[in-house]
Length: 362
Image (cartoon, rainbow, N blue to C red; front, side):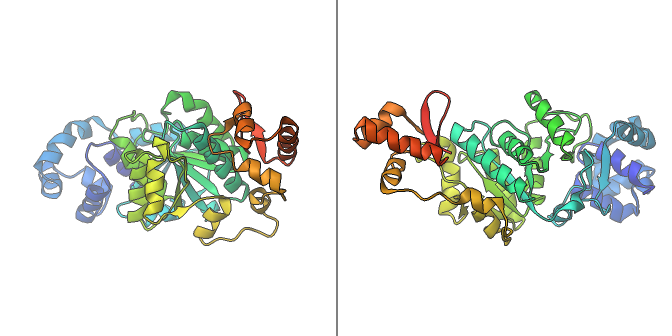
């Protein structure tokens, strides 16, 4: 594509998003012709204010030089006209006209895409749920999409990697900048396991507050549906949900504790009609897929046979777990009966002991 260096050059100019770039192509026929156009012609297309803003930057750029510099860094450039461009993303309103990608992942390799999002301030419960769901979905061949943020996003990526699957991280920075920096190791693991880091922002673009809500439309746009694990009422995850609804994507929500601030948003979504996610099969069913006959998913979501004592003890465990002595007091049993049932549940891999001595569900 001979015009691509000029696409990249326009992408470096402030204020040239999908809408204005489309108008540029419609007006001039190609990005190269637009780049060579006079300021007067550009003003006729974009308006005087925008042209005044972009001209100093435009005059400092050499399109072919900028283009080659990016390629030499091993960064792939995907224009919307490229067959490798994500098909689901191409169908949203005003998709990015360019994507930058690190990693050799091919977006045509799967039709099973799921986004998982949530708060950066995730609880232990939320982190465990996100990792479990993502791992199980990856084992079933799903591509897990998230934003490489702290909390739920990071756990979703880690879970997909543990499931020996692929995961795609959508960045609110250029693909050469990992934010937060503490997730650089995770980013390298994603690339090592043949996943991808993608962004619509040019390489070298650093973290800015307003860029992260913008990237959230890509997280939902890449996916068939969005699973919200934990989210306050006002959060980036809820912004992603709004984009998902606009794009016609399915929205699913994991319930949490009624005492948890981090679950207020997820509970509101359920009240408004989002699919309640109790296990991985709920997600797959909502998206119109069936688990394979030998699916690991079915094995993992089925509880073993439990006797009445075992069921009764489980009723005393909530999502936050319970300390051993507290649990014994709640049951009102003698210690012999209590420890016998506890051991049986541990052997059946229904409960486990967490750091700090709490007993919780596996």
